Image (cartoon, rainbow, N blue to C red):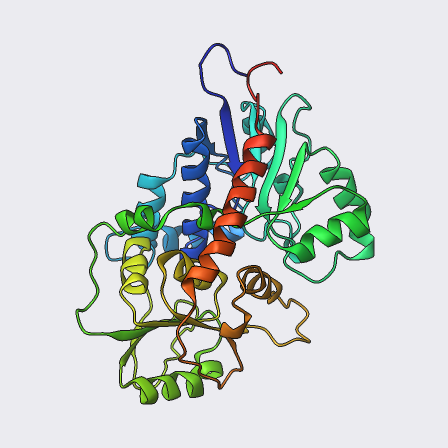
Length: 366
């Protein structure tokens, strides 16, 4: 606990160690926002072995290869090492609780750390001391429902939180209506970081001088092939496609990139004439950087793990639902950025106020 240190120690629990760009962006943003509020911030470096590449022996070999300079995850590993302040690493839930108890307050979020299909009580601060302030910020349930059999456990864990901020209205309503707890919908922390700050993180990376379309798809590329081809035809622009989850699949006629570090991603996105994406973070950073974009549903409506709510939620908040295209659709009308930013500024103010209020007085004995 705090002993005249002047700053409250605030820990973050999220998927900070994942190799995808979105996890890195939201983790960096959460740390940046909390540090900007005057706190002493670190990530509780708890990891699931199955997602950290350390299952012996194959996973251990993969981890070594990935983090070599020529390895596929080296740039991501270096970004996490250099940019994210972390406690010692642990895979043990009991040790994670011990690490958590060394903080004045804990912030869970963002990302889909509360999704029922990946339920892990560590991310709901199971067993953490009552004296530690417990806050969630932009944690996401992600799915349309909390299974009935899990609601009791969810309520037991979340009832110990001092403030619950979730990323989507859908998740807020589930917590209120199914668990009987108070919750507030807030923006993802990536929206609380300014455009200039994101551009500074690009670290001088510059994309090509000639205009281009930048595609960032997590779903199967074939799902969006017709739309991309149509956009290329209508604009006459070349297409750069970042396809980190596509295996060997490609989009015909596009320059395909499999591996991209955060600075490179921000550089490519900020320099694009148009972005096309099925990614929540592709949309979020397009909005933050002021890049015209087209959004696509990654999941079919009947998919058991349909996670489209996060995309629909943010587009609705910002009055940008017209940017959501059918899978083969293209709309090239420009975005009314003045109207979108007016909505965004109000949401940013409300979200910052929620987080500041949730942590007010922490570490000061009040």
